Image (cartoon, rainbow, N blue to C red):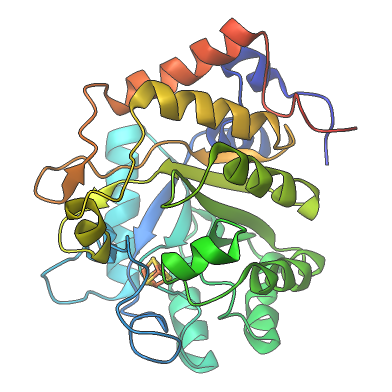
Length: 314
Ligand code: SF4
């Protein structure tokens, strides 16, 4: 893992995934989000019911309310869109909705094959839970590393057991550590998802999460602030007045504190959630736009004279 800050850290204060992709693939690369029709063991009763208290998976299902289309059709449309909108010649196939390793091996092989067959695909990214990657699934996923760059994105959100219980994650931090330790030696890159501002967490709790992730050899991280979506279990906590939600300036400071503890080689794949529609989003309704919040993060790093990784011991 690099200990010297990347040039993009000096520019923005953090190491954006887009910069990583440009260096790695020599041009713009965008993700085509896919829904393979899987569900989640934390919703169907295998691990739990009801899912994580904040889960609004339907909102990132690109086909919500519509009949499921084949992965091939989703890829063809996604590639055409990325080319039209961003002039992207290369894409990652991103299995995003729900738990994308939650099926038998033949089904997984079929859907992954259907995605990587397109010549524009340079990467395969699979979002899943750390308790849903038995070795035979990781072996299957490892097979794709011969053809494309492969990432697994694990939701962890927090390292604290009391928080994981409170948000009904249905797994502990040890499951995450174990999954990462079995994934990395296979040449699969790992991205961790973390939420800042989870119920009951202090600033110190969040920093402990960063410090616990620091030595694990992660390649990427996705952060967002806790927000309350309509029709989630979290909505009840919000209605009961038991949630304290970040303002944008508070979140910006927490992000910078967090990223100072994350090595500069770790590519930042997300810093702000995409959910802004008031049909879905209940709170917080920040006056600042997503791009403004990103700018504020860079400004805060500059104000401090700091960058991602500044508090990582070398
Ligand atoms: S693991 Fe993901 S898909 Fe499953 S309930 Fe939690 S947030 Fe939703």
